[in-house]
Length: 383
Ligand SMILES: Cc1ncc(COP(=O)(O)O)c(C=O)c1O
Image 1 (spheres, rainbow, N blue to C red):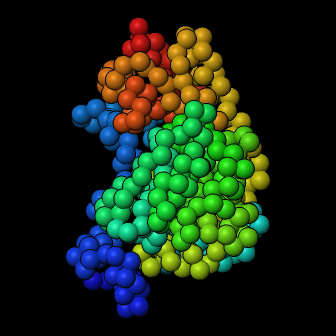
Image 2 (cartoon, rainbow, N blue to C red):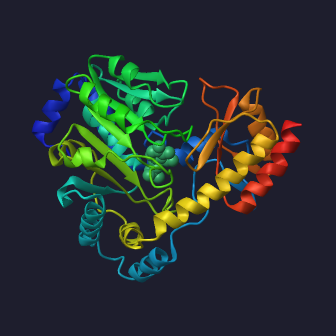
Image 3 (cartoon, helix red, strand yellow):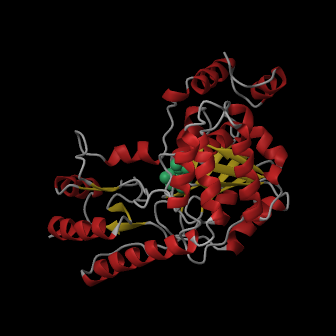
């Protein structure tokens, strides 16, 4: 077993209520990285997939990806680093931590880079949940953490969103007095809706003792009016912020992300992974952060395409959940799965259905061309 836990950390693991069998299972899983039974967005998107392979010219608006890809400056920097890829170059990871810390106004040791944000999300669940300490999340919400919780034998509690599609922070705080981790995604995936700063601060102040708040800000750059909680991490609260370069920065396949929080909290999640991070992704992410106009530019592009698509839905009297993100939920008034399959026949692959909202499907905001094809196919399917 090459799990990166010290003997002390292993003992602590058993103290947290895991059986030796469970512990062995987690160790095996962590050392067999390629076969992790958890899911990230592309893996979850497969759940929406119709049988067979996706044609190369398909419209892919199923996994909240960014068709723009990395910005030209990042692409250039990544091309330049490839030839040096025979080296681990840990300094490039440090450089990303330093740059992101500067941008976010926290100290460099409050930032730990990862290959995307799935890893720190899963690792937070491993670190803070156990058979005695549950995982609490909004519903519909991003399911990856809940799946990780179930795998390790922790209870995963889903708390319905409010009628305004915000996280119901009061119900989340009350869900389980021995909660280990409360997960809040802002803006939320799949709804693209916001939870107010006031509510998040309330949750942070009133969550059960001994629990940690994880705020997943995967889509924060895309949303006008979203308030980051990163300053709370800088103020040493019991909070971890997750960031990714997969969304606005268009680097989903390149893999860069980060966890931001008090160093002692981050130290708890680090033993569940090991090894160097991809130099391409580290350089691409650092370079992207230095392009000062990028966030505003891309936010506007996505907003314009989203608003145009939502206006189309309005015009056709189709109900959807108002969104400030790069995806939205549409009520198709019949089992969502049927619409997903019919859309795939039109070569347009849309996202999935959440069990609690069976007639809603999630659609990612793609390029203008993607959305033009979406509109044509959707009208046909809905007719
Ligand atoms: C809310 C949320 N968190 C985390 C992730 C993980 O993405 P990645 O591992 O590419 O950073 C996703 C992916 O879609 C997501 O939607």
